Image 1 (cartoon, rainbow, N blue to C red):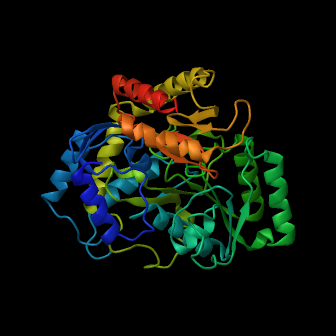
Image 2: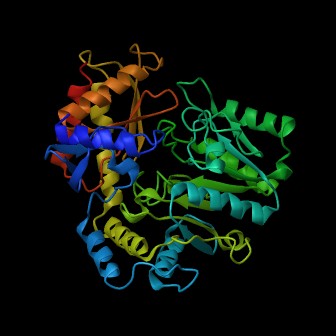
Image 3: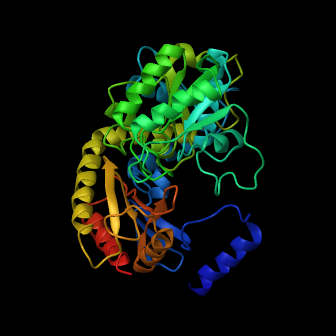
Length: 426
């Protein structure tokens, strides 16, 4: 680490709370599309995308232009004080795009956790019930309610006091964990017998593809079963698309990969190409359940972020990024499948993905599922030393996730893949 970076790290430790972690020791200076340069001028290929925020890449010219134009007009009025067109235009666009049955409405906020909290509030207001069911391994945020929904104790719950009441978890199906779809549904049935009657459940929330949980894809059979169960018992089905949304899975929304639709969708991350914006879109009748003033926030739906989001949606359409996601994903799957057969790298297994939301696991032995978190950490550390930003995730900390911008040139993707291959040669 250079003296400049070391000085910044020392300042970080002195001034910033310990609980805010960081995956690398890189201090960013500038970035462009799928590349980032640190304070010492060293170039990195970015396979993290700001944790799935930069589907349109760092500083996309059309997004930057939209932001600059909005900056020249106004930056904040609070939508609750003096509303503005970018908010309305974005709501109109998303209402038309979202896989929701019937008329839809939207509300905008600032963070993904805030979107999830508001989705739960909306579901509770609509149903008059309190209970919420989530899944093990799911990640929904770090606030008091969303950390309760999150299905992982360390680091999101440990030492932070009791979780909020009324939240229940069901095991998520996973071959590596030995949990089948039937097991998940059986546990849900047990939950209704032992802990909460379905008539007291306001919502079931699920990620179409678990993000922090390890890029595990929700099986279509499970999604259909949840939709049927929610219909039978008047429960609101919430799709948490904070990480899966806006082209990452080869569709605008990941739920478009299924033959059933949710009632509400939470969104954030790549919605505004790096500017803080989140939202909830859903059935109009459900969205309208809270009282006037029951939704919103001082910065929610900031006009600069809304302008950025409108540009992001245009870029996804005009640059055919849904097709790009599917091409990128297919390329990664093919190359990773070949890589998994090699004996000169650490053992990897369970190559998987939906669109360009790609992952694989690092295990102790080929042909087994035993996780190896220590080796995974060593791989991401070596990748940084080689010039690649690479993230891990998963309940056991042994999943490598690939989140390269959908706008990344093929040459940069291949260069990054080759660096990752070198990092796997410990």
